[in-house]
Amino acid sequence: MSGTPGPRLPGTPLWLDAYPAETITNRQFAEHPLPGWDRLFLPPSLAGLMDRPSVGRLEFIEDDNRGAILPEPAVTLDGTAFYLSVKGVGSTVLPFAMDRLDRDAVRPLVRSESTRARLGSAAPGASERMITGELWLRGSPYGGQGLLHAQSALAVSERAELTNLAGFRIAPLVKIARFPPALEEDLRSISWYRRYRGPFVQELRLVPSNVRIYFHGRTTVGESTRWVFERFGIDSNARAVAFEVRFVASALAMLTLFARTLASDARPGRYRGLDFHDVWLDKDAVLAPDGTAYFVDLEGIDEVVVERDGVREKLEDQVYRSLYEFMFAFEQIESERRRRFAALGDRRAHFATIVREALRDDPYARPTETPDGLALLIRNRLSEEPLNTVFPLVDR
Figure (cartoon, helix red, strand yellow):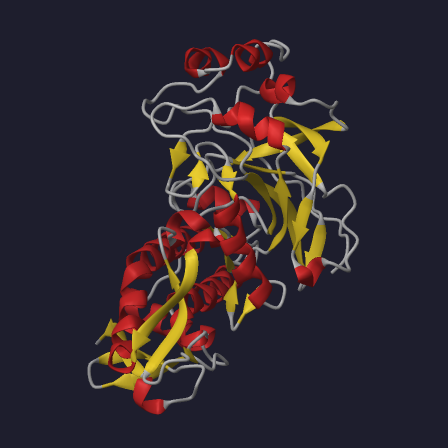
């Protein structure tokens, strides 16, 4: 891990004020110098709620509904430049209407007269994002992030070797930054129907880009594949094919995460492994410039326990859960390759070739030929052959 020169990320500017904060650090990063990372990053519209001055205002770019990214690279991991991403910096959209979420929208909701007055103290024209106290998605405040969700993400991140969990690539959570108690109480008073009662935090993560698959981003593979090719410098057919290989290798690792993390449960006849809950490939993963997909929003990944006779069903269900999103993204990339470089040939045959190359060294997902076509042999971490399953990928 080291500092690195690298490209500046394009995006819509978002100015955030930095404040010293108490943090919880991923143990894998505890010995790495991360100057300036024990911080909260708040929109200027909330400056009046802080009892201390900002230590600086930084230019981020917008990412997702409640996220922001510093556009200059922070570190190099495994030869790839990574950027600081902050989750929980406030939203711009009302939770129950397609309208702006700003000070004027929330003032009538604020029960505390003092809080209401201090919300009006930010300079005109400041970033109008809001973190509220409305309970959202079970464990988070709307526009912000909750501690339980952040701790779930940290637990997954600490299982990986920086960015690699048995071939499943993650954008590591480096620190959880806590909000001061007084700020929490001010924000908790901004609610519509139900109050979030847990601790407010932010996640400080490392991401390889701001390019998502389809949803929750201004720059996605699904909406602007031509622009993605230009941004990542995919200027030849050979580079496009290499991009496809890395994308397929990393995406299929996501679809087989349960097999890669399978372990025997303490109770005989039961097994446990990681599965996805309320997180998805299309909106919760980003692409590195080489095509590798990294899962970013780790809060929805947790262990599940199944009976022995349910292991193979779980393996298949996990593939089916994200199979369409995976194939959708591949189709966008492949269509742009064909358009840009006048590539011809059978699409199914080309996809099968890419799969074989992508999984050449993967110990858990192996391409295998069947009478019906190309299939995926899903092995498991325990090397228990009866728990393996075969999933069809390409019909003849």
